[in-house]
Image (cartoon, rainbow, N blue to C red):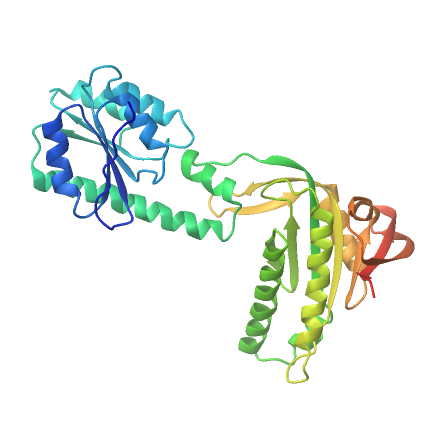
Length: 345
């Protein structure tokens, strides 16, 4: 028999109520159904099924004493599942004694409410937990502007994130030509507006090619394709993004503002990616290929895209003009075969 689901209210937040007592469920639905979406389970087994079905609960109210799986067993299962471990759990129980509460908190419960409960206290504790959930989601959205999604999820779930090696991705290194000279002629506010406008456009371009910005350093912009997930045609997408950046800068030069030019290098390879720092996090990439990508950008020319042999070998599509540049010395990396790339005519 499939577990029954009751969904009431128009609020975004969702509660899963788990209790084998129809009277308790009726009381809780009466208290909560007007303000929240409510899902109901009458057994631990049904609760585990509903916990992973949309809408995913923001909070679980879990009775301790139930036939079959009791509340403690359900909580252990929830906390061992990556999909549900971050959902806060409030235990409901008629069992007396601090020992039972201690067990619940050791299992990962966020709060403990004794039966019979006072409706005012019950609602206050529910609101407190849901406010904390809301704040965590806001933090998650903020982090998502700076970190890959999987890193954000790992930070929220475990409080840390392990470095990892990404075997295949492409890096787009872009630099504004004669930045110092042009910047010296602009007011600070105008300069910041210019950089914000250019880099915001580059963000849109990278996202259109399933990539993302890693960071900016002064007038330098670093974009990646293949960081969040494997992208089989990452080289093609990175080169297309680089060429779109050139096109954007050409279209932007209308004579009414600074005549910016960019120099771009694209390189494909592997990196170590992870968080740096313990108080102020910064997500960054490291490795020999990162240094090579930076050197390649430095050898490019204004309003041109230079790619490495690594990137050229990975290109799968047609329609590009590839012009050999020969072997060029990259500082500290020796001579490398490089190519100019442009769209076919």
